[in-house]
Image 1 (cartoon, rainbow, N blue to C red):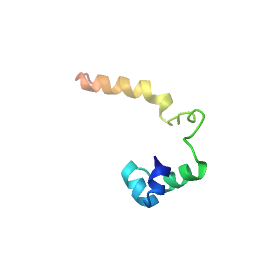
Image 2 (image 1 turned 180 degrees about the vertical axis):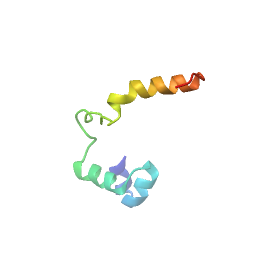
Image 3 (image 1 turned 90 degrees about the vertical axis):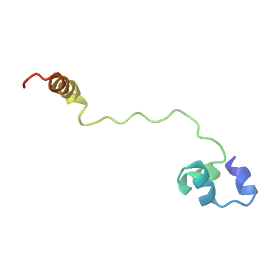
Length: 68
């Protein structure tokens, strides 16, 4: 689709606006010549991951009106 729009004379920034992506993303797709292959990267871990159970517990306790 991007290549078709380029062939029609559309500008990269206009295509990016239509697709709601960065112009850099459109340029990379054109340079690559096809859709990305492979699987996406691993999800980012949060610094709070080790503390999330405790946070959930405290929020639940606070929501139920129990004192700390």
